[in-house]
Image (cartoon, rainbow, N blue to C red):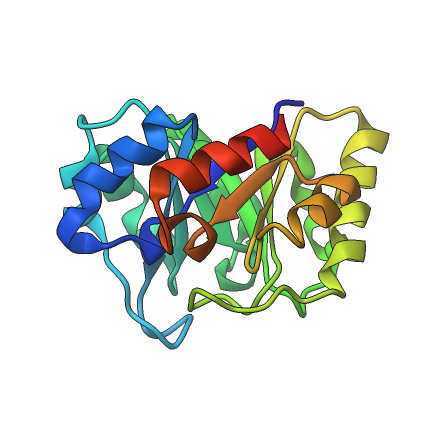
Length: 217
C-alpha cells in the first residue's frame, strides 16, 4: 500500500493558488485535496464547482474531492464533469450509502466514504467492499488548523485491521491535525493517505511538501 500526501487547498493562499498547486506537485504530492463545504452539513462555506473547474487540466495531481454537504447525491455528475477522480462523501450525510457509493463508481470516479470523530469505526464496515478509500476525520469537519483528536487513533487501527482481515485493497485516509507530531502516530495506526493543510501551506509549500513526502516514504 503506497503512502500518499494530499495537500488541502483549504489552507492555500487563493491569490497564489495556481502557483502553490504547482509547488506541492513539483515537491512530490500525488493528490490535491479539495474540501467542499455548504454551511449546512458543516458550519463553514468553502468553495465548489467553479474553483475545481479552474484547477482541472492545469495539474497532473489526482483531484481528491471531499464533499461536506447535505444530499451530496445531487452533485455527483457535476463533480465528475469538473475532473473529480476520488469523490469522498460522508456516511452521516447519506440516506442510502450502498446505492450512493455505487453511483459514484458508475460515473467513473473512485468512491470514498468518510466518518466524523463521533461515528464508530464499525459503522463503515458494511461498505468496505464498495469503496476505494475510507477517510477517518481526526478533527470535527468544517475548519482547518484544528488539533488532532487522540481518540481517533484507535478508529484508524480498527478500520485498517478490518480492511486487512477482508483482504481488500482500500486506502485509509486521515484528515485533521496531521503534522510532524502526529503523522507517525497515524502511519503506525494504518493510515496511508495524509491530508495536510496548514502544515503544508503555512510556510513554503514546496519545502513543507518535500519534507512530508520524505517522512512518509
